[in-house]
Length: 224
Image 1 (cartoon, rainbow, N blue to C red):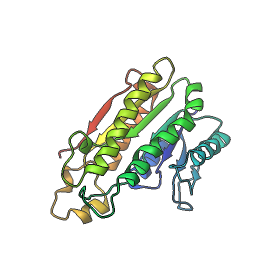
Image 2: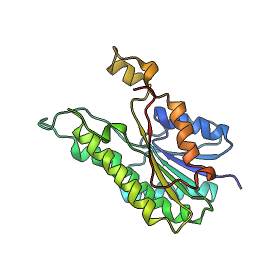
Image 3: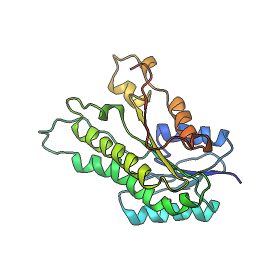
Image 4: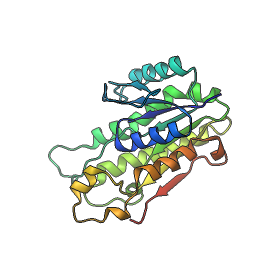
């Protein structure tokens, strides 16, 4: 039976790369995103207008995926955000970073777990950050929230060892995106991580072939 993957943040740069690669692999694909009405490839289910910081919204989104495909075999938690600011910033973004990066992954995972446990090879793949291994100036809120994703990955993997479900995270450095090129015009993007390359790593972790790996935090850093 064809495996079904749900991709949160599927309208973003990395999300689109994952969707394209998953379709090339012949998978059923659902995009869950706060944005709505954006074009998706034929056959892809779009569940738009979803605020994954709300548990009830995550429950409804996952239910929509199951209603369409009858199952979920893998959840790829890509939804998130980034901000650069000092700790003394007048408008601290810590709550927002934890909501966008950690709470979205938690709510989507909790909603999907009953369905993932019914899959012979259930998978959760989170997006952490290499920058969360050792933070830098201006990265406190972002790195702390992504460190939370790392701990969620590890603890959930331990909790699910008696089931078919594995939980892993990728830790990218800098993705080669239009926004990053604009923000860092003097950098060499050839050293950055291509979204398509990160997508392939994530889809391996979402596949049955990765069954021996769980609780791993896998750096995907290009040449940074």
